[in-house]
Every structure is written in structure tokens, then in C-alpha cells.
Length: 162
Image 1 (cartoon, one colour):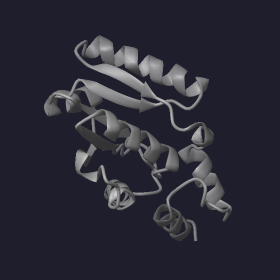
Image 2 (spheres, helix red, strand yellow):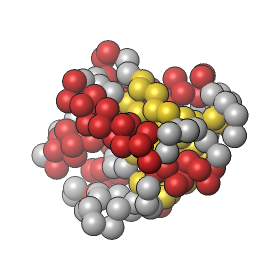
Image 3 (cartoon, rainbow, N blue to C red):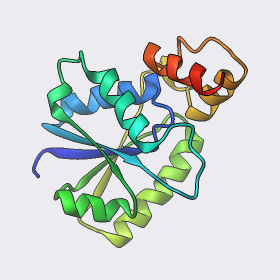
Image 4 (cartoon, rainbow, N blue to C red):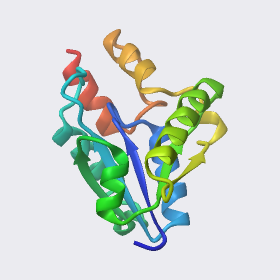
């Protein structure tokens, strides 16, 4: 599909940084496929269905929500991209350590599928420190999540860690 992109991730949980990248992507592309990676070998806080629901709720009032399609997927991202006929993968990069990992992934994807490119987007500078790992740790200790995730995600996290 012309002028479309895939924004993949585990989104476990969805953070304000993820939403910032998604909003930027919605301004750049006519259609953005948010793909929630489901990996049965990893222990997630939220199920794939829960993560999809949390993303849907986060964008329900956004003016750009109609540009977004949210799905779960398992397997190679390039296979999913080919199925959707999309040749742009979006990846959020917060810091150098993210870039090193994402750069290796982009080169691997390019080797496997030369027709698919990776576009790196940076979140707003005030959000660069937020990671799902940090959010889960703050949630586990009962900390204030209000600056890290949307309210409904904070509520869901508190319930999970209660």
C-alpha cells in the first residue's frame, strides 16, 4: 500500500513515548499499521488482546485515529509487511543503545527483504527516558505512572501489580 507504514512493537505496556511516535507517524502516512508482537517465549504483563485494547482506547479521541489499524502478529516482521504490501517499518529510537539494536535489526530486515526500509523516529525529548521496562518497575513498586503512560494504562498496570 502506497504511503503506509508499519509501527511494530510489543507495547507491553503502551507508553507516552509510543503514542508520540504514533502521532508523528499518523501525520506522515495515510495508513499506519500498529503491529503488536506476540511472542509466546516471552512473559508479557498484558496479553496480545489486552495490548490491542489499550492502544485502541489510547487513540479513540485522536483526530488521526482513522489512519491507524491495530493487529497482533507472530513471526517475521518482513513477512507481515509483505502480506500488507507495506515497505516502510517505523522504529522509535530514544538513545544510542536503542539505535545500536534497531540498526542491527534494520540491516537484518534489509538483507532478508531489500524492498523494505526502516525509518527511525525519535520521540519528544521529554519522553526519551521512558521505556516499558522502567514503567513496569515503577508499577511493580506502586509508583506514580502519570508521566509515563496514559491514565487507562496506569490503571490497568496497577490492577496487574496489585
